Length: 290
Image (cartoon, rainbow, N blue to C red; front, side, top):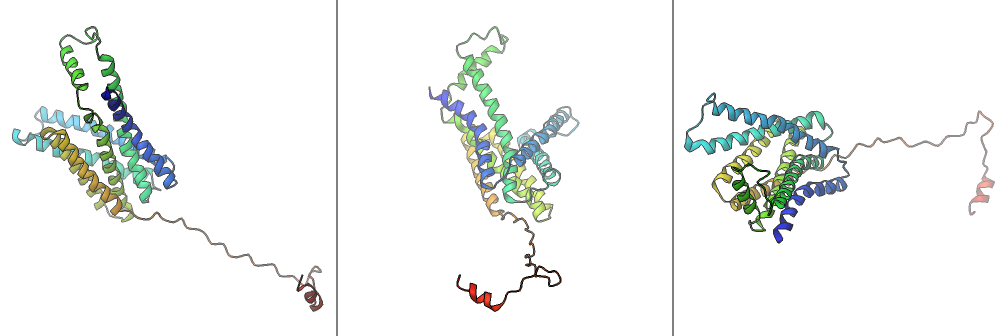
């Protein structure tokens, strides 16, 4: 059955894509993996604050401490709020990484590597979860699950297993395709934040927050209102725009300064010591053609 292959391939590609890109960037621009790990650490640290922040916001709205919008605007409000939350947390941490953690990352190629680490670790973590889910669904086929799952939840889980193994094979690869789009967007955001330091203008950080918020807000809104194909098509367009941003903001890597050493002057014979040689015209004529 082709789904066994494509579902496995989906998770494997999500893990492999940022690693392969990292190898290419490392070799192409002679970079180590330090910046990749800094980008990865930046994403993880941002989520340590971002996820609890969203949970607290949800709790405050549910308990009535914050005014909720009318039901007809609930989805739009949530989309914008979640988009802004993601943009503020991730881009603030990305800015902090450039400023304090990777002070040497002041070139386009280094921003690519940091962006690949930022979006790459997200893709790898999701890929691992996809593969774990693949194993669970494979084992669950034809297995008596009544001893492991409560009776009230068993029909729901069995339905999920049936749906998992009945999707079209091309749908099973959408996760990997989405990671390609997301990785492109994350790299563009690193290139945008880099401009804060190259151009010495904090407006670029605001642009990065806005671009991130727009992408996430559209994604949240469209997932609830449109088909999965429409969602992926829109994200694909945003990824193409991000690719354009990456190359529009491309700048040559700075050439390291080379210290010029003055030419060594030949030592002149010192007549004061007795070691100087006197070369007469006879000896010059004698050696002219030798």
